[in-house]
Image (cartoon, rainbow, N blue to C red):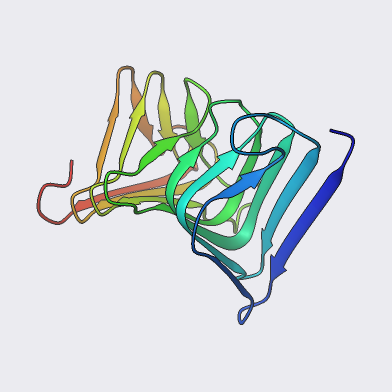
Length: 173
């Protein structure tokens, strides 16, 4: 603890490939110092295994993309998912947003965040799912991905918002 680390990936030709796991704001099992991962302007980070967001960590997706085998925010770090694409595509991978309710929605009118669950990865949400709550958002389930939730779901929740949900490919649900 007491340390601070920031990684920023920005620009269309900027890419960070991680062939194992990525821990933001801590280590394998515990929170640590303050960590931030910023993805802007088409910057891409790929993580083969798990992206773990600790309570002392922040991930900002604002025009960039994060592709990961699994996404674990069970410690409820700050996920600022305003624009860009978050893809969970590990075989048997899991998306855990850390909160009961999850909203895919841009901050500005031209933001277009998209969550992609693919390649037999799954997301099980225990609360409300909103795709395009006030502005725009998209959810894509493909190639055997599965998304389920136990409460209401909204696509284009409020007047003037746009939500797009696409389910495609064998065994996608």
